[in-house]
Structure formats: C-alpha cells, structure tokens
Length: 223
Image (cartoon, rainbow, N blue to C red):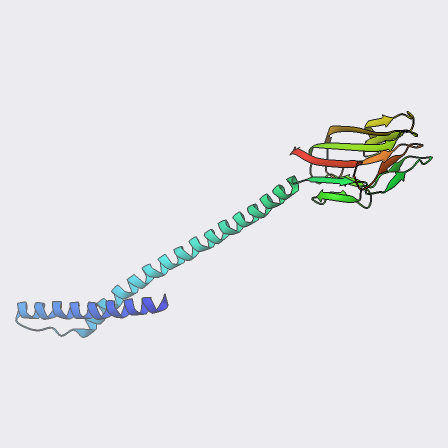
C-alpha cells in the first residue's frame, strides 16, 4: 500500500509540474514573453499531491474501520456457532445398557439401585458405575426397561426419578419358570434430575449373555 501511494505521488508530481510548465510556456507565448516559474509549478503540484494524499489517507482509515467492524462480525458469528454446537451436542442424549451379570441379583432385605454395566451406547449422561442417568438439558425424555427372572421368587422393578417411584413392573412367584416383564414412561426432566432403576426388597432379577434385563433412555425434545 505504501509503495502504491509513493508511485502515485511521484507520478502526480511529475505530471503536475509538466502540465504547469506547459501552461506557463503558453501564457508566455501569448504575452510575448516566457514565464519560467518553476516555484509556482512546484507549489501547485505539491498542493494537488497533498490533497490526493489526504483523500487516500481518509479512504484508508475508512477501510481499516470497515475491516475492524468485519472482524467483530466474524468473531460474533464464531461465538454464535460455538453456542449452536453446544446446543446441538446437548440435544444428543441417549443411552442403552444391560445388567451384564451371569446369574441372579438379589434378593436383598432392602431396595437397591441396579447398575447396568454393559453399555451399548451412551452420550455421556448415564453413569454405568452408579446406574444413574443425569439429565443434561431440560426436556421430555423416554425411558424403558425390562427384567428377567425365575418365578420361583418374585421380581419387582421401580423406575425412579430423584428418589421418587414413577412406574414399576412386578412378577409374582408362579412356580419354577422363566418370565420377562417390561415397562416404560415419558418423563419431563430439569437439568440435573436423576433417573435410575431400583430392585425392590426381597425380589430378584436375572441376566446372562442373552442380555434379558435392560435399561434405556433418550431425549425426545428439549424445552
């Protein structure tokens, strides 16, 4: 940019001096005398060059301001894009797991939280070590579960939300045969709400490599 301005300035000075000299020469011819006024020509050319330079400086400052404004717009769009990525990522909530136990769990003389450690998919909100799902965004979620057991003893399962019983399944003792029960429910959750499965006291549940006993959940839509 500086090189361009220097070349432009030199060219303008050169042309301006030549033009003024020609005008002075013609004026001298018209009056019968030649007026070799180089100082006048130089002053005139210098004034013209200064005016052009000031105009170029003004345009350059305006361009710099537009670039700064554009940088601000780009930065704002970048922040908005990051926020959007966060929203999209937060809306991708799903998990699916099975108990991953070869045999019976229970019976116990108290309720226990079941841990489904064989995880098929998990976007990060389900903790297989504790068996607890924690809602990352406010929204409507769907949960489903299944339980398998030998009916020589009963099986009772609670779907829990923040320590409160939502829905359940219960297989009564009915002889020595294998039974499976399933249930599910749509729940509205706030950020941080916890959902998990509870085995009812004095009942049991069974699982093996066939993965009979499962727990799944996913976000239907945010609120």
